[in-house]
Amino acid sequence: MTDERGISATHLREVLNEAPDGIVVVDGKGTLTFVNNTATAMFGYSGRELLGRPVEVLVPDAFREAHAQHRAEYRARPYVRQMGELVNIAGISKTGEVFPLDIKLSPIGRGKDFQVTAIIRDARSYRQMKDRLEKHASSLTRMNAEMRVLMGELEEKKQKLERASAQRTLILGVTAHDLRDPLAAILGYAKVLHEGLLGEINPQQRDATERIRRQSDYILRLVNDLLDVASIEAGQFRIEQTELDMVRLLQDVVTVERIAADERSLRIVLNHDQEELALKGDPVKLEQAIRNIIGNAVKFAPSDSTVRVGLSLDDGFAAIRVHNEGPVVPDEVREHIFDPFTSGSAESPSQHRGAGLGLTIARTIALGHGGDIHLEPSGQSGATFVFRLPIK
Ligand SMILES: Nc1ncnc2c1ncn2[C@@H]1O[C@H](COP(=O)(O)OP(=O)(O)OP(=O)(O)O)[C@@H](O)[C@H]1O
Ligand SMILES: [Mg+2]
View 1: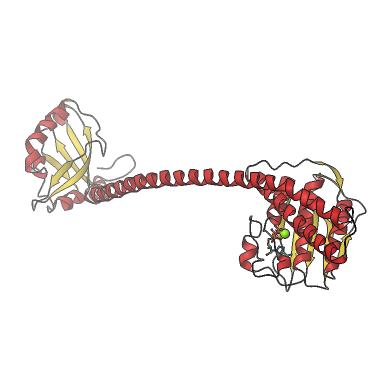
View 2: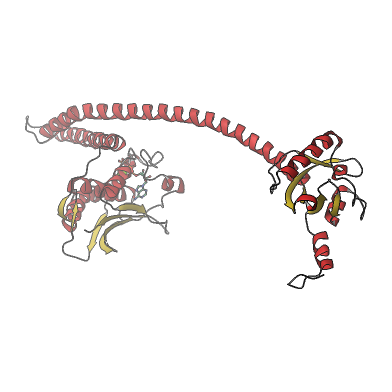
């Protein structure tokens, strides 16, 4: 017998026999009328041992009665029952081994021709996998709960730290603010004394007043930097932009920094391609940032060397490059160089003394203008900082 596509009944039987799932057909009385090879192997029977026997031989003792009843009900209301629709179905092998099954049922024919095809899958490996997955899932749930507790603790610690940090910033701000006025007064009086406005002073006294002036000037700068960092941390660092000429600004900064450079027999050479470079920025803040970068170069360069300051156009940015000779920046300083209070000056000579705030402020100023700052990779010697500002 062949169907219209030319598949012979024998061929069809072979295909069914070798299907990866077990296939059994049961008639209306519950008698097995077909069992494929996969099914016989699954239940441990040989060849045709099962044909003509009631399907209940494949059902474990405990379920046999209920199974016969289900069969009658199914016959009264047949429908296609999918795989996985019923859980905890079990089969029993010839040797008496009970194992989990997954079954799909499809009714064929009516009345006395009623038959049911069952596709049977051995669910042992599936169940084992399911058990394993359930175990994994429960350990994941446990880990999740532990994580949640840890996250809660972390959040609490973070909030504590944030409160502490806000408090520190406040104290920093208030202290620095309160220091600033008396310091300005000390500086003022030192100048008045130094210039002989309160009466003649001798060279020794002049030397002393000069020292007072320098030291209080240093502290005043430090206090101002601390105030800046406090306002950066509080998110209140304001940048007010106006039209300005970058060439002029650089010339002014270099003029001021030359005073310190002269004392160390350093030359500052300024190179710029254009006569004028107009951009929008905060002149006070930019001067502060660039003074620190050039000031650092002057501070860290060996005496009698040259600090080179260049201004050029770089892809829509004005780039200010500051190079000094001297030792390269050690890696441990380089990593945190733009973080507050990073100062590699602990072992350096006292003229290198600094709080490690200058570059933090310079970076905030660069970013606040839509620009950036970086330290170029170490070369043979010295350091090169590049401060960039967008040209709008
Ligand atoms: N041109 C440079 N050459 C070598 N090291 C530098 C140079 N510029 C900065 N550094 C290193 O980076 C550190 C941080 O610089 P930053 O300007 O932030 O602080 P500072 O100069 O130490 O102190 P402050 O600027 O607050 O007075 C310096 O202490 C120094 O170790
Ligand atoms: Mg500095």
